[in-house]
Image (cartoon, rainbow, N blue to C red; front, side, top):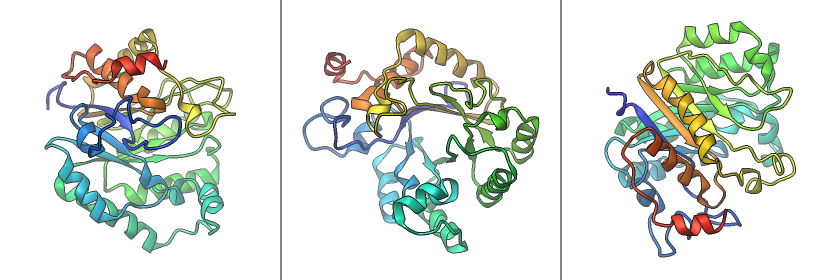
Length: 288
């Protein structure tokens, strides 16, 4: 696989249909379209975020595979029941007790991606308060052992993981990718220098919205457009990794009003990768 051919750049999710941060008229045209089909004209990958809330219907997933061209890859965010038990309980009123059926349901949901050759990786994102203690280690090992048959990327956000060299050793031993993230930094934040732990690299860029990070909602927290100099900084980090990996994913999660696709195209340009201009750039510029 060539250096160019192994780099996949896109956004965290493609469907933002409502609220102030909606993409209609910013990234998507006002006319009725199939959004995934339209999205795939500009990007060769997307991160499925809806799977965090519940495993998607395999029939829907099968239809998604038919809407995108050959060579397009999906990554899938792991169900919150496995990674965010407290959040799962608060949102469902049900205890997050993991069963074999839960594992089977999630695996069945992504089977169409596997069968079509369009499954890029599974993303297991843990909350900021997920610490490197005995319970944390048990949970991390359980996720790795349960989903290690797939390409697996682990997003850890608490510094106790990067402070412990055993984290790197575990992930290297299991050929599991340690996700590189960009977001606001706090005393408890994980190190900015995450080592390569597998032959795949995975970057997630959440934005640096200091004003709304803790007080904003699920939309306004991500109201952050990376500047040109910041894209240079992130691009350098990605570029330094590309030559030593077989597969590299980059996802922008600053999804407010189409900021994510705009920044993703900027990175494609800086990496001298094929890109198509987004037709709604002028409207995006009017709303920065």
